[in-house]
Image 1: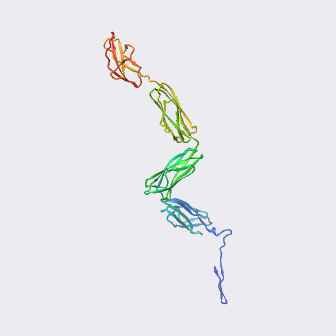
Image 2: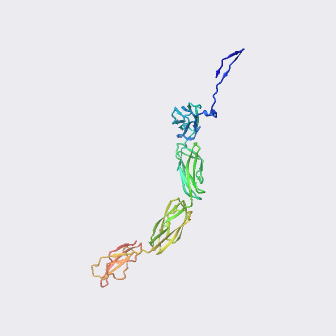
Image 3: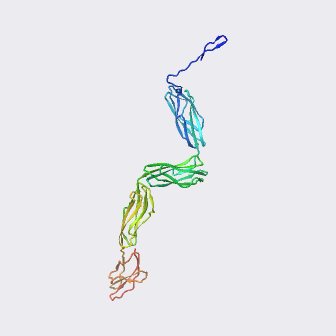
Length: 424
């Protein structure tokens, strides 16, 4: 402002001032003079675990028509730090620079601060508000950290287990639990519950899809002794009803000796989705049996279970039957055919002896069931040879044999030494 010379008019002094005004170009406002801007204008980190230090990227842009020099910056709270901002730095019109802001809370609770950026522009200092909250970590471990339910048919369900363990040095109170996501639910111990150091608690997590498609969610357990909850990811897929197969589809035991047994291994497998086998039923000969299959049994997709089939014939002849498995598979009745033939064992005991040193007409063969006799003769007539085949033996019986020599006058010698024969 310029002041003109002063003139005295009577006793009154009069000062006349001339003021110089700056006129902005047509269409330009005073706000446009603020050349620098933060993007984002403010930054909120939200809840951050103590010991963690996330970062965000911040951009400073020069939207004016002249260059601006970034001279220095200050941060009002030591929980926030910057990196990548090398000052001083001159930004030409339209230029920008990016740096990172890190939040590393040292105590639980809300944290607020500001970044002030001194510059040669009209809006110096440029200020950004920053905030976050430090939260104490609950000493809880969720195992497993994720549960997947693959290929569960609509209308069926499957259950898994989620265990929460207190890994800290002091007790923890679990106040509540919840599942999120379509088809997921949980059951188990009542809450609130107190976990001592090293103690665990286990929940049942169930997936029961009501419609086709993929589902995702989580199970969250909240500790009233901490601001942080522990969680496990949940996911599940649905499918149409599974298929049940049996291998072999039919079993032929062939010839099996009466009184003995023969066994075959068979396998049940689920394909496409889980299958629950509710019962089995046998129709046919009672000489067949099944072992090793505890029903009801649920097989997951591509899972198998083995069992044993046994044929124990009690008489000669063919035997057959059908083993049926009832399940919730697409074909809810699966059949397996079995057959075999019972045969009598053909055993024979072969005997040989040294010839007599005397002139003889032939030999007799005697057999008994006890050592030392009594014996009875089993050959129909004198045997001129020094060997004999006894084909009248039975399975599982032990026999004792002796022989005698007979001369031309019909006189018979005493018994020879005894031999023992055990028939399988």
